[in-house]
Image (cartoon, rainbow, N blue to C red; front, side, top):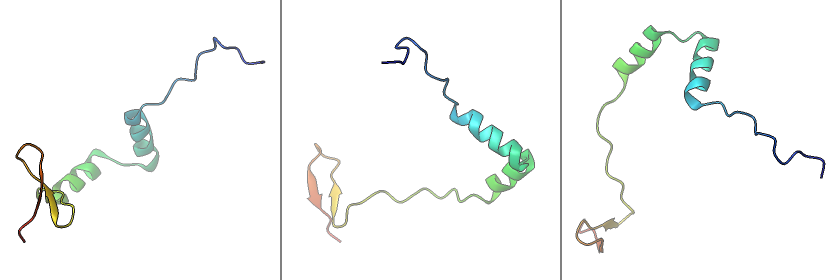
Length: 67
C-alpha cells in the first residue's frame, strides 16, 4: 500500500460557489436573474398522486380515489 492513510481528501467545492463561478463565466447579470424571476410561473404545483391510489391523510391508510 503506497497511499498515505492519513492524507486529507481534496476540499469539495460547494454548490453555491460552483453556480456563482458558472454565472460569472457566462456573463449572467443580476438583471438577467430579475427578468427570469418576473416571468417565472408561481402557480402551486399539483399534489403528487399515484394513479388511482392516493395516500390517505387518516392514519396513513391507502384508499382508492373515487374519480
